[in-house]
Length: 277
Image (cartoon, rainbow, N blue to C red):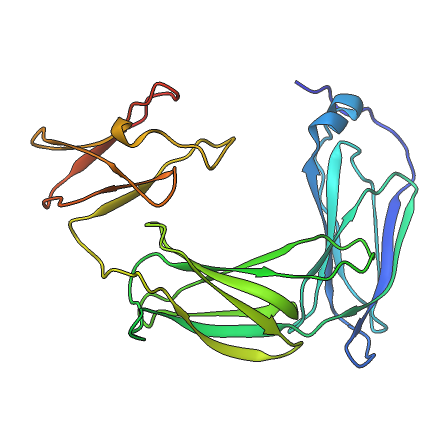
């Protein structure tokens, strides 16, 4: 366990700067905030902080902002800012007591929008299921300290098979459709600031929902790409009948085929892991 942080009367830290919109107008009312996360190595040195409220605020009429706060030294920090219709930006910051971090003047980018559908090889919308879309955007590193890379997510409405994501950075991006059964398909795009793009994301190998099939994903928390062996993942029905999983598309996905209606118990008994059911 870490010791408690020693009480000090250290001066406040400050993060300040000014945000503009494209065209040069002040980003008045833009939200700004600081997030802190415990850093184990720093906690060993400085101890655990007491109750702490992360500071937040809004930019003034001229787009300027200032957050003044007492930073627990056991934390690692990210500073974020957003304005309606614009790309959210983050900086990796290390505020020390009494220090001033001046981010200068920064222009917020109008966000692009992707609206689309998931379709099969024939162009028919894929309806139902727990699909989501991941968007990996390429944010150019211009040496201003912003965090890289940039990943966003969008839920897929199962009724029309449609998705929509706003405030995406301009430039190259890749959108990926993901389902628990591990059907994945990607599409690469080049977006412009403020553009709205409509796309069909084709999943050519999509199979309609099979009510006799159960898909399972099981992984080890420290290594999400490591899972149990398929022969150690079993399903038992209320009547005592057992099914052994078949391997999915990667090492943490499994499937059971041809299941009758009923209630089942899932068991994982792999010698590399603790038993689970």
